[in-house]
Image 1 (tube, rainbow, N blue to C red):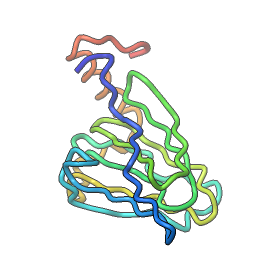
Image 2: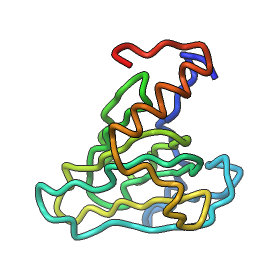
Image 3: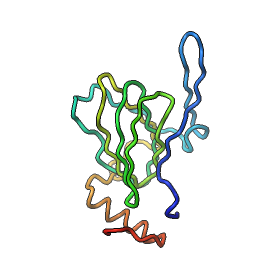
Image 4: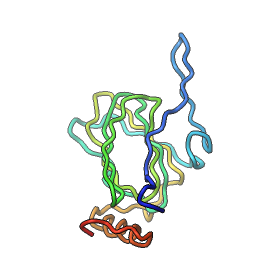
Length: 149
């Protein structure tokens, strides 16, 4: 792991254009670098609400806006970025140890998530202070100092 290694990436998913409508395909080991073990989606999120607010120790995910739009705020302990998703053929691939907050949901938004493992509560880090400590230790183990840690 180096300082230049990104723990997330915005990817373009393939689109098959047709007069009858577009089709996007997502396949394990092709568009996502993991076997898909779980799929879930968020919808009917009330205005002003936030979802997520956690990190995963080992889980990888692909997050897409199946419909509508929302923002994802990401933090890996070294860098932070906000990404606005509003196209069904764009997704955010998340590696482990990325704190995420999802908000700014439009009316009718559907946030679809594909995960590399089944639900496991022990994989979650739900306290941001605990996450920052773990992320700082992870970067320090790689020889990368974290400002403010």
